[in-house]
Length: 103
Image (cartoon, helix red, strand yellow):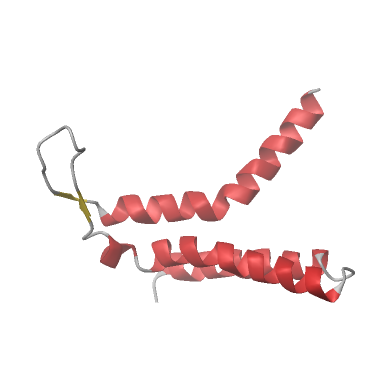
């Protein structure tokens, strides 16, 4: 198994565990919404990381004013964007912590 799948799965499970713990005292409807929202958020970056090679064959077309041309999106770029999207909550939390400590 690929190391990126294992690490991203662990990160996703930690996010889901944090959402479960954070939503534990809420009303049942809010609890379900919070957990489903987090699970839905995690689907896209995990798919980009786990199946970036399959998404890498996508074709990017030119703009309407330009002649049409086709180029393939590199799979490594899709995997990198998946990692950035997966780690975005941590990046935002760290930035918020640093900015609140500075002010």
